[in-house]
Image 1 (cartoon, each protein chain N blue to C red):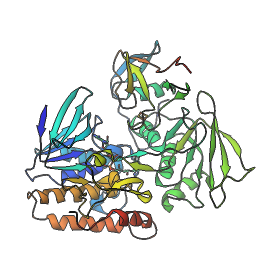
Image 2 (cartoon, each protein chain N blue to C red):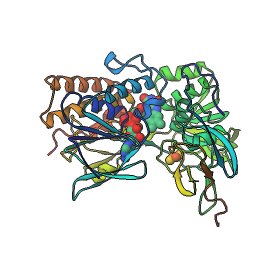
Image 3 (spheres, chains in turn yellow, purple):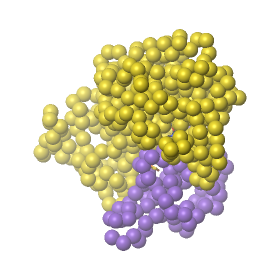
Image 4 (cartoon, chains in turn brown, purple):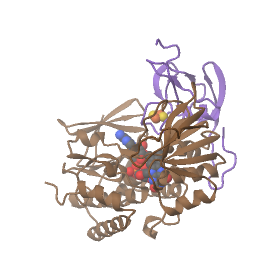
Length: 365
Length: 100
Ligand SMILES: Cc1cc2nc3c(=O)[nH]c(=O)nc-3n(C[C@H](O)[C@H](O)[C@H](O)COP(=O)(O)OP(=O)(O)OC[C@H]3O[C@@H](n4cnc5c(N)ncnc54)[C@H](O)[C@@H]3O)c2cc1C
Ligand code: FES
């Protein structure tokens, strides 16, 4: 079946929802495709309160922000949402996106502009036995525990001390699960000091320059062999020790889900600071394909606050490109760009700044 | 195992449904994915890899990695970490007895 819209938004996480919200009241026909049975993306499992300013929902918990955005978008007459619908491919000859609803119904979706906000997927780590049941991405643990109220295990070791590793460790304690230790391969803790201080206060030890060498167990995880690393990230012989645990949680980063952007033949670049392959884009989130915009993790892995700002920018930029913008459009775009820049200042923002410098182009085409 | 008390979240559960896993009957809620209902019942091995017959469980739980594929109502390769559980579903471990 054929569907026509002005703006197609792929992915209904914070980035996609903020993009949609920016198109409220423009009269443009907006369609959101979301493969889950609900909107909100990863926000729905984030139980911590957000930082930043009032516009960025400071002091509100992630899942509540997800609910607020969902309500706003669902109440607007010019936005249609298709849930349990995957955007499965782009067909350049006829210029449509093929969408599959509930594994049954196929649609050809035609659009004037598309905003790709598909998020990111979790990375794994290379070690012997890394496929045993009981070894999960930190996001899976968040999903099980914060969305469905199911405990991932009893006795957990966390790998990675970035913000996700720290936050999920804290959330595990809240759910009543014991976190034995957090291991970090680098010489220093990766995440914000506030999060690290919180888990330390709760008695979780963080071991730096330490990693997992192999997983123990035949049918399910029974423990791990850990090892110390030297300054060149090599195993220090003789430092291996075995720790029992039933769950190993890998918080070792995310990589952008950019498959559709390859299909659109956007110019892509591998940028390790941003998690993997990302599309080049201008400050309005427009890629080298003039009809394709990006926002959120797919444009470089960061966090929910930046995903919301990027979504806002992309939405307003599209309304402008289609000449259906609200009067304040330039001002809003500029404000969001300023907020984003503020998030990238200092030593904490340095990595993202360096990454963005590799993909940001002034003008496309 | 289900979390009974949580300082922040009040878990709203859907309707109770019954399903079978490898012939044994279990209970779950109709608003949760199949793999989540299995985990809540203490079942962590969902399939076996084809070539080396290694056990597999959830890895990402958001439909990205294919670690949770199972046979559901006779249909193989169902992504059980996102597919909702339904009353009377017949769930089977996938790849059991695969030839090494
Ligand atoms: C599991 C997980 C946990 C995280 N936890 C935190 C945290 O605690 N704090 C934090 O600040 N950041 C966290 N992050 C980082 C993340 O960057 C942001 O929180 C934020 O959610 C990113 O927003 P997004 O809209 O880009 O992506 P997402 O929130 O991932 O939303 C993308 C949406 O697109 C949908 N989708 C993907 N592909 C398709 C397709 N082909 N067709 C249709 N729909 C599709 C997905 O189902 C999803 O709903 C987490 C990330 C993950 C993956
Ligand atoms: S666990 Fe990754 S797709 Fe289901």
